[in-house]
Image (cartoon, rainbow, N blue to C red):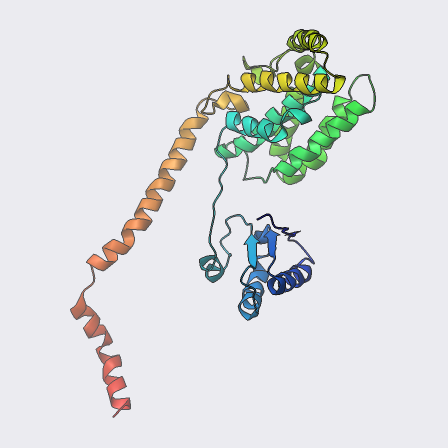
Length: 331
Protein backbone atom coordinates (compact mmCIF):
# COMPACT_ATOMS: atom_id res chain seq x y z
CA UNK A 1 0.00 0.00 0.00
CA UNK A 2 1.36 3.42 -0.96
CA UNK A 3 1.66 5.78 1.99
CA UNK A 4 2.27 9.48 2.27
CA UNK A 5 5.46 9.89 4.27
CA UNK A 6 6.29 13.49 5.22
CA UNK A 7 10.00 14.22 5.49
CA UNK A 8 11.90 16.66 7.67
CA UNK A 9 15.49 17.63 6.88
CA UNK A 10 16.96 18.00 10.34
CA UNK A 11 18.96 21.05 11.25
CA UNK A 12 18.73 24.07 13.46
CA UNK A 13 15.22 24.91 14.75
CA UNK A 14 13.72 21.75 13.25
CA UNK A 15 13.41 19.76 16.49
CA UNK A 16 10.04 21.23 17.48
CA UNK A 17 8.48 20.70 14.07
CA UNK A 18 9.79 17.14 13.96
CA UNK A 19 8.31 16.27 17.36
CA UNK A 20 4.92 17.73 16.41
CA UNK A 21 4.90 15.71 13.21
CA UNK A 22 5.89 12.52 15.04
CA UNK A 23 3.20 13.00 17.69
CA UNK A 24 0.52 13.57 15.07
CA UNK A 25 1.63 10.61 12.96
CA UNK A 26 1.82 8.32 15.99
CA UNK A 27 -1.85 9.00 16.75
CA UNK A 28 -3.06 8.55 13.17
CA UNK A 29 -0.80 5.65 12.21
CA UNK A 30 1.14 7.50 9.49
CA UNK A 31 4.81 7.30 8.60
CA UNK A 32 7.43 10.01 9.17
CA UNK A 33 11.00 10.35 7.90
CA UNK A 34 13.65 12.44 9.67
CA UNK A 35 16.65 12.97 7.43
CA UNK A 36 20.27 13.65 8.41
CA UNK A 37 19.74 13.21 12.14
CA UNK A 38 23.51 12.90 12.60
CA UNK A 39 23.47 16.70 12.46
CA UNK A 40 21.53 16.80 15.75
CA UNK A 41 23.08 14.10 17.93
CA UNK A 42 22.65 16.25 21.05
CA UNK A 43 18.86 16.20 20.51
CA UNK A 44 18.56 12.45 19.95
CA UNK A 45 18.28 11.51 23.66
CA UNK A 46 15.24 13.81 23.86
CA UNK A 47 13.78 12.11 20.80
CA UNK A 48 14.34 8.74 22.42
CA UNK A 49 12.43 9.81 25.55
CA UNK A 50 9.56 11.17 23.47
CA UNK A 51 9.29 7.92 21.54
CA UNK A 52 9.08 5.89 24.74
CA UNK A 53 6.30 8.13 26.07
CA UNK A 54 4.23 8.08 22.87
CA UNK A 55 0.92 6.28 22.63
CA UNK A 56 1.57 4.80 19.20
CA UNK A 57 -0.78 3.44 16.58
CA UNK A 58 0.13 -0.02 15.29
CA UNK A 59 0.71 1.32 11.78
CA UNK A 60 3.00 4.15 12.87
CA UNK A 61 6.55 4.00 11.51
CA UNK A 62 9.45 6.38 12.02
CA UNK A 63 12.24 6.39 9.45
CA UNK A 64 15.60 7.91 10.35
CA UNK A 65 18.43 8.58 7.92
CA UNK A 66 21.90 9.22 9.25
CA UNK A 67 25.57 8.90 8.55
CA UNK A 68 27.85 6.99 10.89
CA UNK A 69 28.56 9.16 13.92
CA UNK A 70 30.46 8.33 17.13
CA UNK A 71 27.93 10.22 19.29
CA UNK A 72 24.85 8.48 17.95
CA UNK A 73 23.00 7.03 21.00
CA UNK A 74 23.57 3.31 21.20
CA UNK A 75 20.19 2.57 22.79
CA UNK A 76 18.35 4.32 19.98
CA UNK A 77 20.41 2.44 17.41
CA UNK A 78 19.66 -0.90 19.10
CA UNK A 79 15.92 -0.23 19.02
CA UNK A 80 15.94 0.40 15.25
CA UNK A 81 15.83 -1.96 12.32
CA UNK A 82 18.93 -0.85 10.42
CA UNK A 83 19.48 -0.75 6.67
CA UNK A 84 22.92 0.28 5.42
CA UNK A 85 23.57 1.72 1.98
CA UNK A 86 27.09 2.25 0.74
CA UNK A 87 27.57 3.52 -2.79
CA UNK A 88 30.07 1.48 -4.85
CA UNK A 89 33.46 3.14 -5.11
CA UNK A 90 35.17 4.25 -8.28
CA UNK A 91 34.87 6.99 -10.89
CA UNK A 92 33.27 4.61 -13.37
CA UNK A 93 30.51 3.46 -11.00
CA UNK A 94 30.02 7.02 -9.76
CA UNK A 95 29.39 8.33 -13.27
CA UNK A 96 27.14 5.40 -14.16
CA UNK A 97 25.11 6.07 -11.03
CA UNK A 98 24.77 9.73 -12.02
CA UNK A 99 23.55 8.94 -15.53
CA UNK A 100 21.21 6.26 -14.24
CA UNK A 101 19.69 8.87 -11.94
CA UNK A 102 19.41 11.46 -14.70
CA UNK A 103 17.90 9.25 -17.39
CA UNK A 104 17.29 10.32 -21.01
CA UNK A 105 14.78 13.03 -20.07
CA UNK A 106 17.46 15.16 -18.42
CA UNK A 107 19.97 14.87 -21.26
CA UNK A 108 19.66 18.00 -23.43
CA UNK A 109 19.51 17.75 -27.20
CA UNK A 110 22.07 20.54 -27.67
CA UNK A 111 25.46 18.80 -28.06
CA UNK A 112 27.52 21.38 -26.15
CA UNK A 113 25.07 21.40 -23.25
CA UNK A 114 25.09 17.59 -23.14
CA UNK A 115 28.89 17.56 -23.17
CA UNK A 116 28.99 20.11 -20.36
CA UNK A 117 26.76 17.86 -18.26
CA UNK A 118 29.08 14.95 -18.98
CA UNK A 119 32.02 17.07 -17.83
CA UNK A 120 30.07 17.94 -14.67
CA UNK A 121 29.36 14.27 -13.91
CA UNK A 122 33.04 13.49 -14.51
CA UNK A 123 34.22 16.36 -12.31
CA UNK A 124 31.79 15.38 -9.54
CA UNK A 125 32.98 11.78 -9.63
CA UNK A 126 36.64 12.82 -9.47
CA UNK A 127 36.25 15.13 -6.46
CA UNK A 128 34.20 12.51 -4.62
CA UNK A 129 36.43 9.52 -5.35
CA UNK A 130 39.60 11.49 -4.63
CA UNK A 131 38.54 11.18 -0.98
CA UNK A 132 39.79 7.59 -1.16
CA UNK A 133 43.34 8.95 -1.08
CA UNK A 134 43.01 11.11 2.05
CA UNK A 135 45.33 12.64 3.23
CA UNK A 136 47.27 12.63 -0.07
CA UNK A 137 44.19 13.37 -2.18
CA UNK A 138 42.41 15.80 0.11
CA UNK A 139 43.52 17.11 3.47
CA UNK A 140 40.40 15.52 4.97
CA UNK A 141 37.10 13.90 4.00
CA UNK A 142 34.87 16.57 2.40
CA UNK A 143 31.10 16.18 2.11
CA UNK A 144 30.62 16.60 -1.63
CA UNK A 145 27.02 15.47 -2.10
CA UNK A 146 24.39 14.90 -4.76
CA UNK A 147 22.89 18.26 -3.81
CA UNK A 148 26.06 19.93 -5.15
CA UNK A 149 25.62 18.03 -8.40
CA UNK A 150 21.96 19.07 -8.74
CA UNK A 151 22.68 22.75 -8.10
CA UNK A 152 25.59 22.70 -10.55
CA UNK A 153 23.40 21.06 -13.16
CA UNK A 154 20.73 23.73 -12.70
CA UNK A 155 23.32 26.48 -13.17
CA UNK A 156 24.49 24.97 -16.46
CA UNK A 157 20.90 24.62 -17.64
CA UNK A 158 20.19 28.28 -16.90
CA UNK A 159 23.31 29.41 -18.74
CA UNK A 160 22.43 27.42 -21.85
CA UNK A 161 18.79 28.55 -21.73
CA UNK A 162 19.85 32.19 -21.63
CA UNK A 163 20.54 32.08 -25.35
CA UNK A 164 23.17 31.24 -27.95
CA UNK A 165 26.68 32.52 -27.62
CA UNK A 166 29.87 31.72 -25.80
CA UNK A 167 29.35 30.20 -22.36
CA UNK A 168 31.16 32.18 -19.63
CA UNK A 169 33.22 29.30 -18.28
CA UNK A 170 35.15 31.65 -15.98
CA UNK A 171 31.84 32.45 -14.30
CA UNK A 172 31.17 28.72 -13.88
CA UNK A 173 34.64 28.22 -12.41
CA UNK A 174 34.14 30.99 -9.89
CA UNK A 175 30.69 29.85 -8.82
CA UNK A 176 31.65 26.20 -8.43
CA UNK A 177 34.96 26.98 -6.72
CA UNK A 178 33.78 29.82 -4.52
CA UNK A 179 30.39 28.53 -3.42
CA UNK A 180 29.18 25.08 -4.43
CA UNK A 181 32.12 22.69 -4.24
CA UNK A 182 34.66 25.06 -2.78
CA UNK A 183 32.25 25.92 0.01
CA UNK A 184 32.99 22.53 1.60
CA UNK A 185 36.76 23.06 1.50
CA UNK A 186 38.70 24.77 4.27
CA UNK A 187 42.22 24.00 3.07
CA UNK A 188 43.89 26.43 0.67
CA UNK A 189 45.76 23.73 -1.24
CA UNK A 190 42.58 21.69 -1.69
CA UNK A 191 40.80 24.79 -2.94
CA UNK A 192 43.51 25.23 -5.57
CA UNK A 193 42.97 21.60 -6.61
CA UNK A 194 39.25 22.28 -7.07
CA UNK A 195 40.09 25.25 -9.27
CA UNK A 196 42.55 23.22 -11.32
CA UNK A 197 39.97 20.50 -11.91
CA UNK A 198 37.39 23.06 -13.02
CA UNK A 199 39.79 24.57 -15.53
CA UNK A 200 40.61 21.10 -16.84
CA UNK A 201 37.01 20.00 -17.36
CA UNK A 202 35.16 23.21 -18.21
CA UNK A 203 36.99 24.90 -21.05
CA UNK A 204 36.38 25.24 -24.80
CA UNK A 205 39.30 22.97 -25.71
CA UNK A 206 37.73 20.02 -23.89
CA UNK A 207 34.06 20.71 -24.55
CA UNK A 208 34.24 22.00 -28.11
CA UNK A 209 37.51 20.78 -29.61
CA UNK A 210 37.74 17.29 -28.09
CA UNK A 211 40.85 17.75 -25.95
CA UNK A 212 41.45 15.26 -23.15
CA UNK A 213 41.36 16.55 -19.56
CA UNK A 214 44.07 15.53 -17.09
CA UNK A 215 46.13 14.16 -19.98
CA UNK A 216 44.02 10.99 -20.18
CA UNK A 217 43.24 8.97 -23.29
CA UNK A 218 39.59 9.13 -22.22
CA UNK A 219 37.61 12.06 -23.61
CA UNK A 220 34.08 13.37 -23.87
CA UNK A 221 32.16 12.00 -26.89
CA UNK A 222 32.43 14.36 -29.84
CA UNK A 223 29.43 16.28 -31.08
CA UNK A 224 29.97 14.86 -34.58
CA UNK A 225 28.64 11.49 -33.47
CA UNK A 226 25.54 13.22 -32.19
CA UNK A 227 24.94 14.90 -35.53
CA UNK A 228 25.13 11.58 -37.36
CA UNK A 229 22.79 9.95 -34.86
CA UNK A 230 20.40 12.89 -35.01
CA UNK A 231 20.19 12.92 -38.81
CA UNK A 232 19.61 9.17 -38.90
CA UNK A 233 16.93 9.59 -36.29
CA UNK A 234 15.18 12.36 -38.19
CA UNK A 235 15.15 10.15 -41.28
CA UNK A 236 13.69 7.30 -39.25
CA UNK A 237 11.04 9.57 -37.76
CA UNK A 238 10.07 10.90 -41.17
CA UNK A 239 9.62 7.38 -42.44
CA UNK A 240 7.48 6.44 -39.45
CA UNK A 241 5.51 9.75 -39.49
CA UNK A 242 6.30 10.32 -35.82
CA UNK A 243 5.80 13.57 -33.95
CA UNK A 244 8.51 16.07 -33.14
CA UNK A 245 8.11 15.31 -29.43
CA UNK A 246 9.19 11.72 -29.96
CA UNK A 247 12.18 12.99 -31.96
CA UNK A 248 13.56 14.81 -28.95
CA UNK A 249 12.93 11.87 -26.64
CA UNK A 250 14.59 9.33 -28.92
CA UNK A 251 17.57 11.54 -29.71
CA UNK A 252 18.14 12.11 -26.02
CA UNK A 253 18.03 8.36 -25.49
CA UNK A 254 20.72 7.87 -28.12
CA UNK A 255 22.84 10.58 -26.50
CA UNK A 256 22.49 8.83 -23.14
CA UNK A 257 23.55 5.48 -24.58
CA UNK A 258 26.56 7.10 -26.24
CA UNK A 259 27.64 8.61 -22.94
CA UNK A 260 27.17 5.36 -21.03
CA UNK A 261 29.19 3.43 -23.61
CA UNK A 262 31.96 6.01 -23.15
CA UNK A 263 31.87 5.65 -19.36
CA UNK A 264 32.13 1.87 -19.68
CA UNK A 265 35.57 2.34 -21.24
CA UNK A 266 36.91 3.38 -17.84
CA UNK A 267 38.66 0.88 -15.62
CA UNK A 268 36.67 -0.69 -12.78
CA UNK A 269 39.46 0.21 -10.37
CA UNK A 270 40.53 3.82 -10.05
CA UNK A 271 43.98 4.71 -11.28
CA UNK A 272 45.95 7.63 -9.80
CA UNK A 273 46.05 9.34 -13.20
CA UNK A 274 42.26 9.69 -13.07
CA UNK A 275 42.85 12.30 -10.35
CA UNK A 276 46.13 13.77 -11.54
CA UNK A 277 47.95 12.06 -8.65
CA UNK A 278 51.39 10.40 -8.78
CA UNK A 279 51.53 6.66 -9.38
CA UNK A 280 53.08 5.90 -5.98
CA UNK A 281 50.01 7.21 -4.14
CA UNK A 282 48.56 3.70 -4.37
CA UNK A 283 51.37 2.37 -2.19
CA UNK A 284 50.53 4.89 0.49
CA UNK A 285 46.85 3.94 0.28
CA UNK A 286 47.72 0.26 0.60
CA UNK A 287 49.87 0.92 3.67
CA UNK A 288 47.08 2.91 5.33
CA UNK A 289 44.51 0.23 4.52
CA UNK A 290 46.81 -2.49 5.84
CA UNK A 291 47.33 -0.64 9.13
CA UNK A 292 43.58 -0.20 9.54
CA UNK A 293 42.90 -3.89 8.91
CA UNK A 294 45.64 -4.96 11.34
CA UNK A 295 44.29 -2.57 13.96
CA UNK A 296 40.78 -3.98 13.56
CA UNK A 297 42.05 -7.55 13.82
CA UNK A 298 43.97 -6.67 16.97
CA UNK A 299 40.84 -5.12 18.46
CA UNK A 300 38.94 -8.35 17.78
CA UNK A 301 41.58 -10.56 19.40
CA UNK A 302 42.09 -8.53 22.59
CA UNK A 303 38.94 -9.74 24.39
CA UNK A 304 39.89 -13.36 23.67
CA UNK A 305 43.33 -12.82 25.14
CA UNK A 306 41.77 -11.21 28.21
CA UNK A 307 39.53 -14.21 28.84
CA UNK A 308 42.42 -16.63 28.35
CA UNK A 309 44.52 -14.79 30.97
CA UNK A 310 41.78 -14.67 33.62
CA UNK A 311 43.20 -15.97 36.93
CA UNK A 312 40.53 -16.89 39.49
CA UNK A 313 42.92 -17.07 42.45
CA UNK A 314 44.39 -13.67 41.70
CA UNK A 315 40.92 -12.12 41.59
CA UNK A 316 40.01 -13.76 44.89
CA UNK A 317 43.10 -12.28 46.53
CA UNK A 318 42.34 -8.83 45.18
CA UNK A 319 38.66 -8.90 46.16
CA UNK A 320 39.13 -10.58 49.55
CA UNK A 321 39.33 -7.31 51.57
CA UNK A 322 36.15 -5.99 49.96
CA UNK A 323 34.27 -9.25 50.49
CA UNK A 324 35.35 -9.49 54.13
CA UNK A 325 34.22 -5.93 54.78
CA UNK A 326 30.87 -6.68 53.14
CA UNK A 327 30.37 -9.70 55.38
CA UNK A 328 31.11 -7.67 58.51
CA UNK A 329 28.65 -4.97 57.50
CA UNK A 330 25.90 -7.53 56.99
CA UNK A 331 26.38 -9.36 60.31
